[in-house]
Structure formats: C-alpha cells, structure tokens
Length: 240
Image 1 (tube, rainbow, N blue to C red):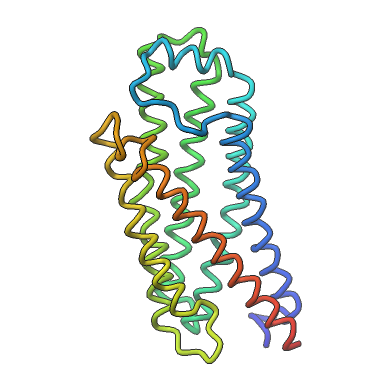
Image 2 (image 1 turned 180 degrees about the horizontal axis):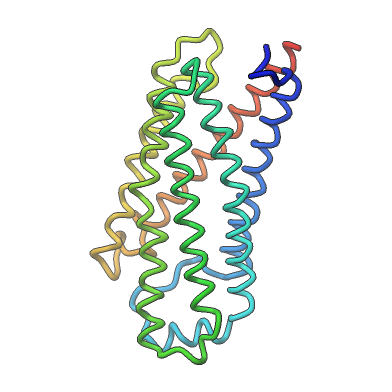
C-alpha cells in the first residue's frame, strides 16, 4: 500500500509520529494544568475577587509556566488531530464528511484550549497591578471558556461513533463497542453546559457533572482511542 507517493513504511512512521504527539499533548497539558499551575481541583466559583487576585499573585510563576506548557501541548494536539482524521478516512475509504468533521472539531477544540491558556497567562502577567474585580471577571471568563468547550468537542464523538457503527471491515480500526463508548462520551460531556448557570453544586465548573465526569469520560475515551490506533499501526507493520 502507498499513500499519495509516500511509501508504506513512511506512512506508518507518520502515523507513529501522530500517535506520540498525542502522548506529548497529554503529558504537557495534564502536567502543566495539574502539577505546575495547580488548577486541580478547580477553584471554587464562589471565590471573592480578592481571593482570586491573591491566587495569581502568590502563584504567578508556576501559573505562567504551567499554561505555557499547555499551549505547547496544544501544538502537539494539532498533529494528533490530523492523524485521527486520517484514521477515520481509512474507515471511510477516502477523506469524507466523518474524517473532515473529526479533524475540524478537534482543531477548533485545541484552538479554543490555546486561547483559554492565553487568558490564564494574561491573568498571571502582572496580577499585582490589576483591579481585583477585573481579575474576577477574566477568571470567570477563562473557566467558562475552558468548561464550555462542549459544543465544538461534541462532533468528534459523534463522527467517530458513526464511523465505528458503519465500518464493515473484517478487522475494523474502531470496533462497534468503541462506537457506543463515543456515544456515551458525547452524552456525558453535555454536563459542562451547566456551568453557565450554577455557582455551586454538580453543574458548577468544579462540580461532578461539569468537570469530574467529563474528565473521567475523556480519560477512558483517549486511552481506548490510543490503544486501538496503536494496534492498527502494529497490524500495518506486520503486513509489510
């Protein structure tokens, strides 16, 4: 098999690069957000303006470094988005609507995550000089933009679920059970919409339905996706 003039071995190598870019994205994004910036667990939406300002003044450098890591993580995410779109195109037999939706939805999600990271960097740029109420407004903005990423993310799960259900290959890249996993992922991510309306409880940005269930949801999804993609790569290598 060849791919537009690229040898099969080079095609497989490119897929491996895309796969490892997903690992780089997860390591940079996860460690930057949790370990360095210290944004896990999420801050209480009910924090006062002075408390928000103190958080950024006291942790300025670590927040700057953590969200810079997240921005670099998004750069690797774009490469993985291209690989995932290409994988769906193999299911379709060409670049069709499912593969284009998968790539486009992921691309827009990573773009918005990068913008969210930039807003966090803004808050940490010179927090001692900013008015506390202004910081509170931007703090609300950045968390709402981060959790309310639901709409541009949903088409990924929908397109991949349809691809898994429609694939009739003898050895599908994404088996039928994966389609159900994506369908459930789509449903569970809808809880994030509630953070626009609640300051506390399960639908607030630090709540069960808005944050923790989508986090578990994404973790299961990405582990399953990377496992299936790696098996697909190994099957291609075995066929050389």
